[in-house]
Length: 340
Length: 178
Image (cartoon, rainbow over all chains, first blue to last red; front, side):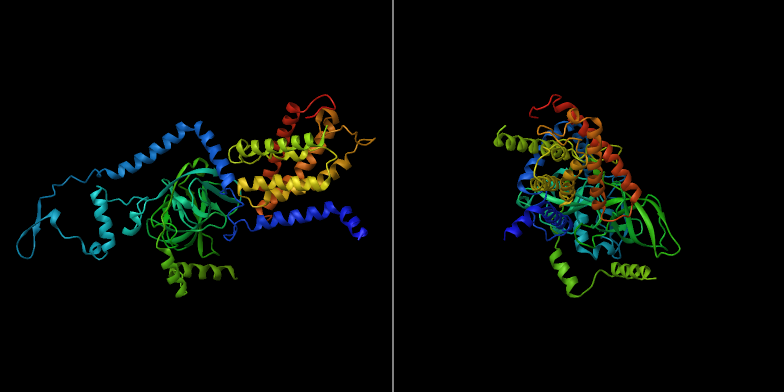
C-alpha cells in the first residue's frame, strides 16, 4: 500500500497530465456534435450574461456603424413596400379586348394566368405581395402562407468567431423567445447559419463558416441545385458551391440562393454570388467559389427563422427512404467520382 | 506572506487574466496581420511562482483553458494546449536553472532573471503551446504553410504582449509581491 501511494505521488504529474489531456481532447472532439450537453458553451447562463455585457459596452463605441447598418436594412425593406416604377404606367381600366360573350374585358378584371391559378398557396402569397405594392419576393418574407404568419425572431449577435476551423455565433435569444435547435438564422444580407444549442436566453449558432455545415442551395438564374460548404483554409468572405455538374453553364456574378430542400431555410434566401469557377477534366463537378453575401466580420443583427413544418416532411422523407432525388443523384455521382 | 494571501492573490490574477482576455483581447477583434492571435491568458500560467507543485499547475492550466474554451466555443482546444504548457513548464525551468539553483525569492521576472533567461523561457513555452494549439485546431496537416504562418505571427504577438506585461507590471526590485 505504501508503495502504491509512493508510486502515485512519484508520477502524479504524468498521470494528471494524461488525464486532463484526455478530458480536454474528449471535449474538443465532441464539440461539434449535437448530443453535447448545452452547458459547456458560450450559450450557458453565466458566460451568456458576461458576453452580453461585453456587447453592451463595445456597442457603445460602434453606435454609428450599427445605426447605419440598421438604416440600410430599413431602407431596403421600405423600398420593397413602394410600388415599382412601372406599376402605374398603364391605366388599369383600359379595355384589353372582348371575351367570348362579347363583353368588354378590362385589364384589372382579367382572370389570373393559369400558371398561377394552379397553385393556390402562391396565389394567396402573390395577392399579399400585390397588396403591398410589390411583385418582387422579399428574401425575408417566407414562402407558404402558414409560415409567413409567424414572425422572424430578431436577435443580436453577442459573440462571434471568424478565424477558427469551426466558427460559432452566440445570440441573445433563447428558448424563452421561441428559438429551438436546428432553426435557420438569416440576416438582411443573406444566410448566416443554423442554431445548434439553446439555453433559456441565449443560443449558439454554427455559422456558415463551420466545416460541417452544408446549406442546400441553387443558382437563381437557372435553378441548378448544389450545396454550399466552407472547407478548411477558406477565408470568411468566401465559400464553395459543390455538386454543380460540369456541363452546366456558369456565369460570374450569378446569385446563389437557398433551395429550401433541407427545410432549415426557406427557399430563395440569398447566400452569395459566384466569384470564380473551374472545370477539371477528371471531375464531374465544377469547383465554384462564392463570395458570401453576409460580411461575418461585422455581423450585428440577425433573424431566426420560425419553425417550418419540417417534422412532418422529414419523417415522410425518412419513411420512404428518399432524399430529394437530385441531391441523391448528385451524391451518387460524387461517390462514383471518388472511387477511381 | 501567509498562504491565504498567496491563494487570494493568485485567484485575483486568474480573474484578471481571464477577464481581460475574454472582454478585451478577443480573438476576433485583436488580430495581427489577419493571421496572428494573442494568447494573453497564458501570462497567468507563465508567471506562476517557480515552486508551484506540478499537480496544481496542471489543474490551473486546465481551469484556465477550459474557461476560455467556454467563452470561445472551442470545446477543449485551449484546455488541451494549456495543460501541455503547464506540464512542460517545470521541465523548461529545470533546463534553465542558474548555476547555483533558484533562490527562494526567485520569480519569473525579466528584471530579476535577466533578458536572456526570460526570452529563452518565454519563446520555448509559447512555441510549444502555439504549435500544439494551431495544429490541433486544424485536426490535420493539410495546410502546413498557412498554419505555420499563423503559428509564427502568433508566437511573435503573444511574446511581445507578455514582455510588455512584464515590463509594465513586474517589480524591478527583488522580494516584493507582484
